[in-house]
Length: 120
Image 1 (spheres, rainbow, N blue to C red):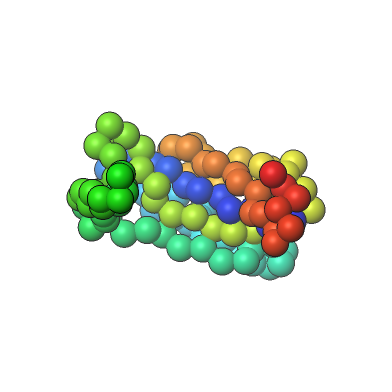
Image 2: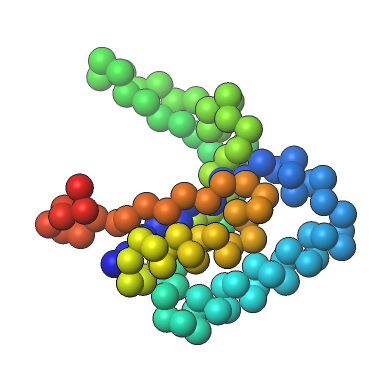
């Protein structure tokens, strides 16, 4: 079963860390990623660019409204994602809980629908 793991973070949390703490977390991220790759559960993923470089698009009444960045009300922003292929939702949440990002922000686990849509 495939799952997308969405990583939300508040840039202020990262900036509040000392250089030593950031270096330590970077090492944890690298070890975590290596473990997922070696287990064969990692499918892909990417960090996302600064929210200042994004656009939000909504179409209402056939008229597109395009605004800068994500919604301003949110302190946490979507910072990245990765896709895993593992046995079940329990295993996917175990993986997400080990992601160092879960200590700094929020990590969501979403099942990816197959073509039949049986996950609905």
